[in-house]
Length: 267
Image (cartoon, rainbow, N blue to C red):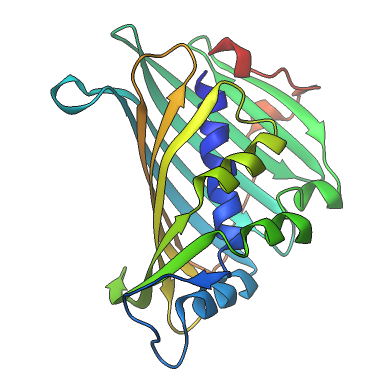
Protein backbone atom coordinates (compact mmCIF):
# COMPACT_ATOMS: atom_id res chain seq x y z
CA UNK A 1 0.00 0.00 0.00
CA UNK A 2 2.74 2.45 0.92
CA UNK A 3 4.56 2.17 -2.40
CA UNK A 4 1.34 2.42 -4.39
CA UNK A 5 0.24 5.63 -2.62
CA UNK A 6 3.69 7.19 -2.99
CA UNK A 7 3.69 6.23 -6.66
CA UNK A 8 0.34 7.94 -7.11
CA UNK A 9 1.67 11.11 -5.53
CA UNK A 10 4.75 11.21 -7.74
CA UNK A 11 2.82 10.45 -10.94
CA UNK A 12 0.34 13.24 -10.22
CA UNK A 13 3.08 15.75 -9.41
CA UNK A 14 4.98 14.69 -12.53
CA UNK A 15 2.01 15.27 -14.79
CA UNK A 16 1.34 18.68 -13.32
CA UNK A 17 4.92 19.97 -13.43
CA UNK A 18 5.42 18.86 -17.02
CA UNK A 19 2.12 20.14 -18.31
CA UNK A 20 1.35 23.37 -16.55
CA UNK A 21 2.33 25.67 -19.39
CA UNK A 22 -1.33 25.68 -20.35
CA UNK A 23 -3.70 28.48 -19.42
CA UNK A 24 -4.03 31.23 -16.86
CA UNK A 25 -6.70 31.11 -14.20
CA UNK A 26 -9.40 33.67 -13.71
CA UNK A 27 -8.78 36.56 -11.33
CA UNK A 28 -5.55 37.19 -9.48
CA UNK A 29 -2.54 38.98 -10.97
CA UNK A 30 -2.56 38.90 -14.78
CA UNK A 31 1.12 39.65 -15.49
CA UNK A 32 4.37 40.26 -13.65
CA UNK A 33 7.46 41.54 -15.46
CA UNK A 34 5.47 41.36 -18.68
CA UNK A 35 4.80 37.60 -18.31
CA UNK A 36 1.75 35.56 -17.42
CA UNK A 37 1.93 32.70 -14.93
CA UNK A 38 1.89 30.10 -17.77
CA UNK A 39 4.80 32.00 -19.39
CA UNK A 40 6.87 31.63 -16.22
CA UNK A 41 6.08 27.94 -15.87
CA UNK A 42 7.01 27.32 -19.49
CA UNK A 43 10.40 28.92 -18.81
CA UNK A 44 10.79 26.73 -15.72
CA UNK A 45 10.21 23.61 -17.81
CA UNK A 46 12.76 24.79 -20.37
CA UNK A 47 15.41 25.79 -17.80
CA UNK A 48 18.50 23.61 -17.94
CA UNK A 49 21.08 22.87 -15.27
CA UNK A 50 23.87 20.34 -14.88
CA UNK A 51 23.54 19.52 -11.18
CA UNK A 52 21.08 20.14 -8.34
CA UNK A 53 20.30 18.98 -4.82
CA UNK A 54 16.85 18.40 -3.43
CA UNK A 55 15.10 17.93 -0.10
CA UNK A 56 11.58 16.55 0.21
CA UNK A 57 9.37 16.17 3.28
CA UNK A 58 6.02 14.38 3.15
CA UNK A 59 3.34 13.99 5.81
CA UNK A 60 0.29 11.78 5.28
CA UNK A 61 -2.71 11.50 7.62
CA UNK A 62 -6.01 9.61 7.69
CA UNK A 63 -9.36 10.63 9.15
CA UNK A 64 -10.69 14.16 9.52
CA UNK A 65 -10.92 16.80 12.24
CA UNK A 66 -10.37 15.50 15.77
CA UNK A 67 -10.18 11.95 14.38
CA UNK A 68 -7.21 12.73 12.15
CA UNK A 69 -4.18 10.55 12.75
CA UNK A 70 -0.73 10.58 11.20
CA UNK A 71 -0.29 7.64 8.83
CA UNK A 72 3.15 8.27 7.38
CA UNK A 73 6.03 10.70 7.40
CA UNK A 74 8.83 10.59 4.88
CA UNK A 75 11.98 12.57 4.22
CA UNK A 76 14.04 12.37 1.02
CA UNK A 77 17.41 13.97 0.32
CA UNK A 78 19.28 13.63 -2.92
CA UNK A 79 21.42 15.02 -5.68
CA UNK A 80 21.23 14.90 -9.46
CA UNK A 81 24.08 15.13 -11.92
CA UNK A 82 22.07 15.72 -15.07
CA UNK A 83 25.09 16.19 -17.29
CA UNK A 84 26.53 12.76 -16.38
CA UNK A 85 23.14 11.05 -15.87
CA UNK A 86 23.83 10.13 -12.26
CA UNK A 87 21.73 10.61 -9.13
CA UNK A 88 21.02 9.37 -5.64
CA UNK A 89 18.03 9.54 -3.30
CA UNK A 90 18.09 8.63 0.40
CA UNK A 91 14.69 8.04 2.01
CA UNK A 92 13.60 7.66 5.63
CA UNK A 93 9.96 6.81 6.29
CA UNK A 94 7.79 5.99 9.29
CA UNK A 95 4.49 4.22 8.62
CA UNK A 96 1.92 3.90 11.40
CA UNK A 97 0.02 0.67 10.74
CA UNK A 98 -2.60 -0.30 13.32
CA UNK A 99 -1.03 2.04 15.86
CA UNK A 100 2.43 0.48 15.51
CA UNK A 101 5.06 2.75 13.90
CA UNK A 102 7.35 1.04 11.43
CA UNK A 103 10.52 2.75 10.23
CA UNK A 104 12.21 2.00 6.92
CA UNK A 105 15.21 3.36 5.08
CA UNK A 106 15.92 3.07 1.38
CA UNK A 107 18.49 4.32 -1.11
CA UNK A 108 18.56 4.66 -4.87
CA UNK A 109 21.71 5.32 -6.88
CA UNK A 110 22.02 5.67 -10.63
CA UNK A 111 25.68 5.38 -11.62
CA UNK A 112 27.65 3.78 -14.46
CA UNK A 113 24.48 2.79 -16.36
CA UNK A 114 23.10 0.84 -13.38
CA UNK A 115 20.23 1.63 -11.03
CA UNK A 116 21.01 0.38 -7.51
CA UNK A 117 18.18 0.04 -4.97
CA UNK A 118 18.69 -0.67 -1.30
CA UNK A 119 16.00 -1.16 1.34
CA UNK A 120 16.38 -1.72 5.07
CA UNK A 121 13.35 -3.61 6.42
CA UNK A 122 14.84 -3.92 9.90
CA UNK A 123 17.50 -6.53 9.22
CA UNK A 124 20.08 -4.54 7.28
CA UNK A 125 20.25 -3.01 3.83
CA UNK A 126 19.39 -5.36 0.97
CA UNK A 127 20.78 -4.21 -2.40
CA UNK A 128 19.77 -5.07 -5.96
CA UNK A 129 20.57 -3.52 -9.33
CA UNK A 130 19.11 -3.15 -12.80
CA UNK A 131 20.76 -1.92 -15.97
CA UNK A 132 19.58 1.42 -17.33
CA UNK A 133 19.90 3.04 -20.71
CA UNK A 134 19.76 6.52 -22.18
CA UNK A 135 16.03 5.98 -22.66
CA UNK A 136 15.56 4.98 -19.00
CA UNK A 137 17.06 8.27 -17.81
CA UNK A 138 14.32 10.03 -19.75
CA UNK A 139 11.54 7.64 -18.71
CA UNK A 140 9.66 10.44 -16.99
CA UNK A 141 9.30 12.57 -20.09
CA UNK A 142 5.66 13.22 -20.88
CA UNK A 143 4.72 12.81 -24.52
CA UNK A 144 3.15 15.55 -26.62
CA UNK A 145 -0.10 13.58 -26.66
CA UNK A 146 -0.21 13.47 -22.88
CA UNK A 147 0.63 17.15 -22.60
CA UNK A 148 -2.19 17.98 -25.00
CA UNK A 149 -4.64 16.50 -22.51
CA UNK A 150 -3.70 19.24 -20.08
CA UNK A 151 -3.85 22.20 -22.41
CA UNK A 152 -7.37 23.11 -21.39
CA UNK A 153 -7.56 21.50 -17.98
CA UNK A 154 -4.95 23.12 -15.76
CA UNK A 155 -5.26 26.63 -14.33
CA UNK A 156 -2.26 28.55 -13.05
CA UNK A 157 -2.46 31.87 -11.23
CA UNK A 158 0.11 34.36 -9.98
CA UNK A 159 0.07 34.78 -6.20
CA UNK A 160 2.72 37.48 -6.47
CA UNK A 161 6.46 37.55 -5.82
CA UNK A 162 8.25 36.37 -2.69
CA UNK A 163 11.77 35.78 -1.38
CA UNK A 164 12.38 32.07 -0.79
CA UNK A 165 15.77 30.80 0.46
CA UNK A 166 17.08 34.32 -0.18
CA UNK A 167 16.04 34.14 -3.85
CA UNK A 168 13.55 36.47 -5.53
CA UNK A 169 10.79 34.19 -6.83
CA UNK A 170 7.51 34.15 -8.68
CA UNK A 171 4.87 32.46 -6.51
CA UNK A 172 2.26 30.56 -8.53
CA UNK A 173 -0.82 28.52 -7.69
CA UNK A 174 -1.63 25.44 -9.81
CA UNK A 175 -5.04 23.75 -9.92
CA UNK A 176 -5.61 20.76 -12.23
CA UNK A 177 -8.81 19.22 -13.50
CA UNK A 178 -9.05 16.10 -11.32
CA UNK A 179 -10.85 14.00 -13.94
CA UNK A 180 -8.11 14.61 -16.51
CA UNK A 181 -5.36 14.06 -13.94
CA UNK A 182 -6.91 10.78 -12.80
CA UNK A 183 -7.33 9.59 -16.38
CA UNK A 184 -3.68 10.17 -17.20
CA UNK A 185 -2.43 8.63 -13.96
CA UNK A 186 -4.52 5.49 -14.58
CA UNK A 187 -2.72 4.99 -17.89
CA UNK A 188 0.51 4.88 -15.87
CA UNK A 189 -0.80 1.94 -13.84
CA UNK A 190 -0.62 3.74 -10.50
CA UNK A 191 -4.29 4.35 -9.69
CA UNK A 192 -5.78 0.89 -9.13
CA UNK A 193 -7.92 1.15 -6.00
CA UNK A 194 -7.04 4.83 -5.54
CA UNK A 195 -9.15 7.88 -6.28
CA UNK A 196 -7.75 11.40 -6.28
CA UNK A 197 -10.20 13.56 -4.31
CA UNK A 198 -8.40 16.91 -4.20
CA UNK A 199 -5.11 18.37 -5.44
CA UNK A 200 -3.46 21.78 -5.24
CA UNK A 201 0.11 22.95 -5.69
CA UNK A 202 2.12 26.11 -5.11
CA UNK A 203 5.50 26.67 -6.72
CA UNK A 204 8.24 29.25 -6.25
CA UNK A 205 10.25 29.88 -9.43
CA UNK A 206 13.49 31.89 -9.34
CA UNK A 207 13.05 35.18 -11.22
CA UNK A 208 16.59 35.21 -12.61
CA UNK A 209 17.11 31.58 -13.64
CA UNK A 210 13.55 30.17 -13.68
CA UNK A 211 14.75 27.20 -11.61
CA UNK A 212 12.29 25.58 -9.21
CA UNK A 213 13.09 26.71 -5.66
CA UNK A 214 10.17 25.16 -3.77
CA UNK A 215 7.06 23.13 -4.50
CA UNK A 216 4.24 22.54 -1.99
CA UNK A 217 1.63 19.89 -2.82
CA UNK A 218 -1.60 19.36 -0.88
CA UNK A 219 -3.81 16.42 -1.87
CA UNK A 220 -6.52 14.08 -0.64
CA UNK A 221 -6.85 10.43 -1.74
CA UNK A 222 -9.55 7.81 -1.32
CA UNK A 223 -8.07 4.32 -1.04
CA UNK A 224 -10.13 1.19 -1.65
CA UNK A 225 -10.62 -0.69 1.62
CA UNK A 226 -10.06 2.35 3.85
CA UNK A 227 -13.05 4.14 5.36
CA UNK A 228 -11.22 7.44 5.79
CA UNK A 229 -9.61 9.63 3.19
CA UNK A 230 -5.84 10.07 3.23
CA UNK A 231 -4.47 13.60 3.27
CA UNK A 232 -0.95 14.38 2.12
CA UNK A 233 1.18 17.49 2.29
CA UNK A 234 4.57 17.50 0.57
CA UNK A 235 7.25 20.17 0.42
CA UNK A 236 10.17 19.87 -1.98
CA UNK A 237 13.02 22.35 -2.16
CA UNK A 238 15.83 22.44 -4.71
CA UNK A 239 19.13 24.22 -4.24
CA UNK A 240 22.84 24.33 -5.11
CA UNK A 241 22.20 24.39 -8.84
CA UNK A 242 25.31 23.88 -10.99
CA UNK A 243 27.46 23.31 -7.90
CA UNK A 244 29.86 20.35 -7.62
CA UNK A 245 28.06 17.08 -6.87
CA UNK A 246 29.95 13.89 -5.97
CA UNK A 247 27.88 10.72 -6.29
CA UNK A 248 29.66 7.61 -5.00
CA UNK A 249 28.10 4.17 -4.73
CA UNK A 250 28.24 2.73 -1.16
CA UNK A 251 30.71 -0.11 -0.79
CA UNK A 252 28.01 -2.55 0.34
CA UNK A 253 26.08 -1.96 -2.91
CA UNK A 254 28.93 -3.01 -5.20
CA UNK A 255 27.98 -6.69 -4.96
CA UNK A 256 24.23 -6.07 -5.38
CA UNK A 257 22.33 -8.91 -7.06
CA UNK A 258 20.89 -8.24 -10.49
CA UNK A 259 17.11 -7.99 -10.77
CA UNK A 260 15.07 -6.08 -8.22
CA UNK A 261 12.05 -7.40 -6.35
CA UNK A 262 9.13 -4.98 -6.02
CA UNK A 263 8.07 -4.26 -2.45
CA UNK A 264 4.87 -2.57 -3.60
CA UNK A 265 2.51 -5.44 -2.79
CA UNK A 266 4.05 -5.81 0.67
CA UNK A 267 2.20 -2.75 1.84
